[in-house]
Amino acid sequence: MKKIVMMMMMVLLVTACGKTTDDMYDKVEAVTEAVVEEAVKEEVVTEAVEELAEAVVTEAMTLKVIAPYGTPVLTMVKMFVEQPEIAENVSVEYEALQATDVLTSELINENADFAIVPTNLAAVLASKDVGYKLAGSSVWGIFYIVTTEEITSIEELKGKRVGMIGKGLTPDAMFRYILTENGLNPDEDLTLEYFSGSSELATNFISGQIDYAMMPEPVLTNVLLKREGSIAAIDLQASWADATGMDSYPLSSIIVKESLAESSPEIVEAFLRIYGESVAWLNENPAEAGAYYESLDLGLPAMIIEKAIPACNLRFIPVDEAKEDIDKFLDVLYTFNPKIVGGQPIDKDLYLEK
Image (cartoon, rainbow, N blue to C red; front, side, top):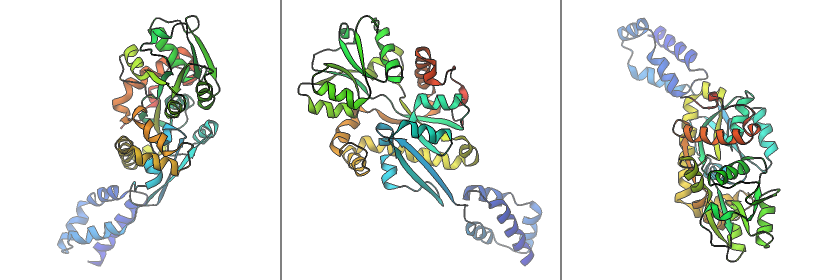
């Protein structure tokens, strides 16, 4: 009897090292027929095997998760605050980053296990063989044309002066594509005036220096409260859908370290499931989400976040369902400026495969 128990313990200890509890049980079931037969002869009950299995603890694991300020970190605000359990003996460190260069540096050095990033950055990382895979998209467009005028179509922007951000980058590429698809030449039919960022753009619009602007949420909500008579006249997500036939455009996505996906797919699956639930929760609980955002000192008050959430188009769609929309979006960016997506056509190895 002692010999059989010792044999089982050796099998359990050898096979459980570095494995999750589910893996461990798989190994227990794979104990050789000879050992099982001998155990039966010695009347070793199955409960003894189960007790031994439960006594082996999964090797500790700490995950690092990063996200930039704004809507990317907003998608994770529930996880940042509540610190949900991903799996037994797995802890998570969350960090919000204000500077884009810090975000990029962290990823180039593969210092994070999960990150919410601009979708084109995921493509850039793939083009440089940095070890991340795109697992799904969660921010499906945040841009609107704000003005004090009553306009309802892209064509009515002809002859107008429109404030912009991101010259040569994603917002520029997306808006120019929409203009072109609506019969307007971006360089001849209207004037695009570029500002250094959303704050400068907002300041100039609120002060009346410009009367039309391509404004992102949640800054847009703040602007609408501060300039009397201003309205979000054109939903550029709807304009994109009309121009492309796609539902919308995947502005931000979640990426996962490739080595983690290979070694611990069950951990990745659990994290993505909880992330999806967290994003869905935002739309159902905007007031609480706003309070969470403000508690993390991310730059905007709870009231603004609460009002902005419905217009932020937040929903997590796994990569196997979002791939067509992602492909179209990245193709438009590549055509406008190949450098935005890494300088080469989109590599299908970009995506996480189950």
